Length: 114
Image (cartoon, rainbow, N blue to C red):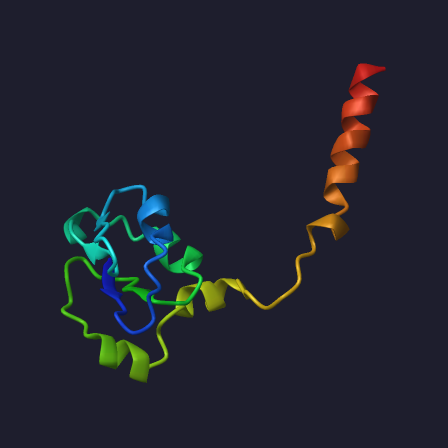
């Protein structure tokens, strides 16, 4: 469940608002988005994964609001922890062009047409 949107980290880009499938956030003009419907959070982590500045924390096993505060999340290094656990590293170069599985698919598609 989404627990924290960091006031100090957030740039108000509203990417979290756009990627949330449950419409949990509300946009606030010239401010960070607010968690408006926390109970609707599906714990999908999309907001945390797509946040470009690691300003969100989603509690992975919460059944309801935990009342976590930003200072605790910061102190424990939890901002962006889910994305890091997945290997999502914003500083790493892409590699999709090196993925040869698409070549196999193209070959199979061509073989089906013959």
